[in-house]
Amino acid sequence: MLPLALLAAPAMAQSAPDGAAIFTRCAACHTATGAGVPGAFPPLQSDFRTLAAKAEGRRYLALAVIKGLSGAITVQGKPYRGFMPAQPLDDASAAAVLNHVGAKIATSGPAFKSFTPAEVAAARAGGAKLSAADVARLHEAAGGQ
Ligand code: HEC
Image 1: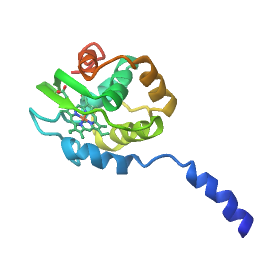
Image 2: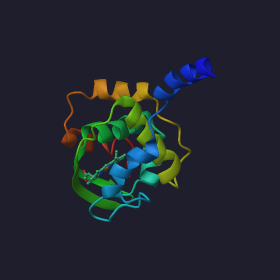
Image 3: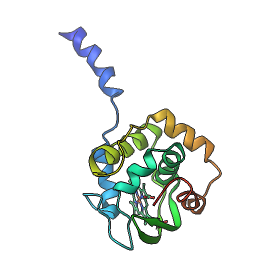
Image 4: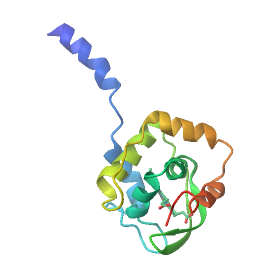
């Protein structure tokens, strides 16, 4: 039994972060269902999945989470001009929460393909100089609607 326990421990330490648990911090603003609050906090629904279907949109979504977002964007036909603080998440945790949103919160839109920690790391490296306002300016060209 002991060797088995010793083998199991490192596997558990490396298990993926729990996206549902991380999402509770997002739910403080975007609500538990991701429906958001019109005019204040955008829904994490079809716009999320539409963005996640394109490379530029995926980069924008990862950057919105890790760099924050500040500026005028239109989400599902409604205007927002709010401020989302950068979320202090490592690459694996950011990927886990994006995947929770894409798979469990966003209920409509194109089929969702999971983010990998490497994809988040690439967005983080490429967007190192971007501010939250710069990220908001990416929304429309990235396919947001
Ligand atoms: C303090 C409130 C707050 C928290 C916490 C928060 N957000 Fe946001 N989020 C916002 C606001 C406000 C906007 C819109 C910003 C704007 O108008 O420029 C936004 C926008 C977004 C967008 C862009 C949506 C789109 O369709 O373009 C995504 C994606 C997002 N948030 C995901 C998350 C995730 C995932 C978390 C948790 C890790 C999170 N947010 C935590 C307030 C918050």
